[in-house]
Image (tube, helix red, strand yellow):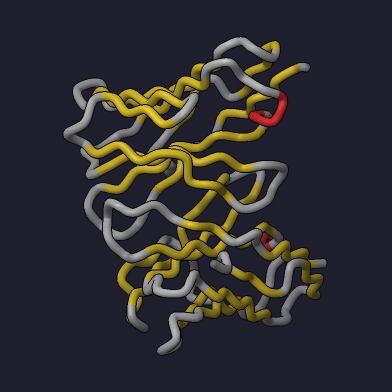
Length: 110
Length: 113
């Protein structure tokens, strides 16, 4: 079974709005990463947050991690049409094996 | 620098045949991981190689195998293809340390008919 589960499964917003997606996982982790995938192509690494970090920023992205709740959130501020994609979280529990969540499909309407 | 290169991009095979997919990682990356992506199962981990050694393996049958060469290039092989093997196969390279993200290739779209 998948380690991570994203919520919501799909999200549709207007350009300029913020998009928030959540990831829950089941076991303790070393780190958690977020990836973006456009139209069934390869995934693009967005950000990595270590288990001892609570928040991280990269440009318009903000990631939080709550290890007590085994959850993470990805916030994309001021969304653009180009942000339309599927977003996945991925976790590792200390092995060189990342488990991906089910993904959130984000659609940003122009 | 060049990204992760996967060949071929598309492949159509018949049930029962075998297939070999290739992945060339980013120069300097010694770890290569393989994933299978399907609409129903999402991204499933196949295996990971580091310096020619398999470090981790997912829960796939023995029909799925892989290897890594001394130049870090990797191949995966699927024998006795089944219709359910139709998927996007993604290769990802990294430095091989836990705190480094993956760089993915564009994938090989395999269709089994």
